[in-house]
Length: 68
Image (cartoon, rainbow, N blue to C red; front, side, top):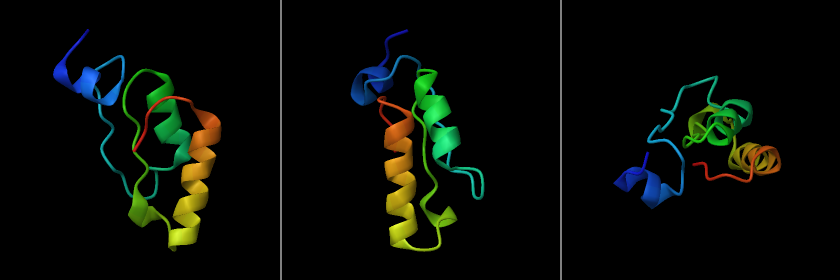
C-alpha cells in the first residue's frame, strides 16, 4: 500500500510504532521496521545520552530499514 506516510519514511506499511516506556528498545523497533513499519526507540527509556546512542547503534545492527 502506498500512502504519503510510506513514501515520506520509505516504509512498506503505513504503521508507526508509538513510543512505549520500558519496551521501546532496539529489539522492538527493529522488529517493527523489519516487518515494514517504522519502529521507534523510546529515548526516555535510556538513563543517559550515551546509553541511547548505544541503543541506536544496536538497532542499526539489527535492521537496515528506517527507524526513529
